[in-house]
Length: 397
Image (spheres, rainbow, N blue to C red):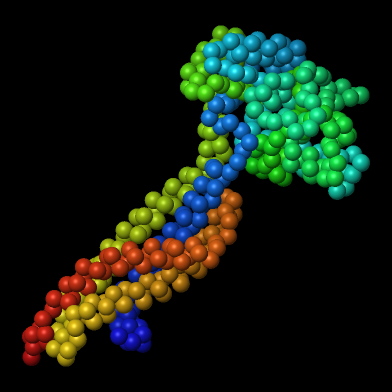
């Protein structure tokens, strides 16, 4: 059957064709963006973080009394908590920090090389104030220099030394070692391997760490624990009771593994990808039902026409291919319309979440899925059409 004749057949049922095209376009737009979002979320969840996600626990705490949230009682509280945590069987190391990692945002600021401020000034770098065992908990490698062994206080005259992650050190000092060089926040004492800090930072691997005594924690603080292999669950079950025994005047916001922290970081994308996938699946089912109903109705309505074609020598195979071709043409037009709808939906979603632009192969993939679904739906009605006898052409005579 020629293409002009196929168009003419579709135009004989304008309303049904238009509604089916709209349904196909919306289905493809949802399907395309759900695949794109699922792909991005999978890549984000599997990107290297430089951290042991399964065997590192993060506890977010806030003292409930003002005195415990400031130096010197805060320092005493942290020492008591860390000593108790280190005595739990299965705990390899424990440390405090003013904030966790794998965060959307948090405590950050600008960092620059004082000898090259204009070029090196880097905004939104996470600033960590930690205890000395922090690096042991994370399991990072020391690439240059030596890690600070003791906590020191900030003073007007001097700042504690700074430990930089490798990516940040290379950015600030591209042609020389960073150790011993001066930053706006202190001198660099060591460079460590990269780890994922904050998603909203200028670079997720840029991190600045200082081993210092805590001064105040109005918004709470983080305790980090490294556990032995296979001991994470057992240690986790004891944390609440152990910490409350040390000091009952605390509020524990949450206890998470870093793997759970990573899932939490991408919860919006994960949830939206799941929602779009469900909607796409439902729309595919509805589209298949609509395609089946439309084709089945047309077969019943056109029995005499099919009978005449059979009487004039049209084979069953030709009748079958003709009906499939009508569905394929409708799907092709719907796919082209759907790509336009997908672009609009992609633009709208990108205003809410971080979403990459569409690439060339996704429309081909989703179009193929849509074509397969429609073909599957109209296969049976097309098979019924091949059973129409040539004698049907004489019924109206």
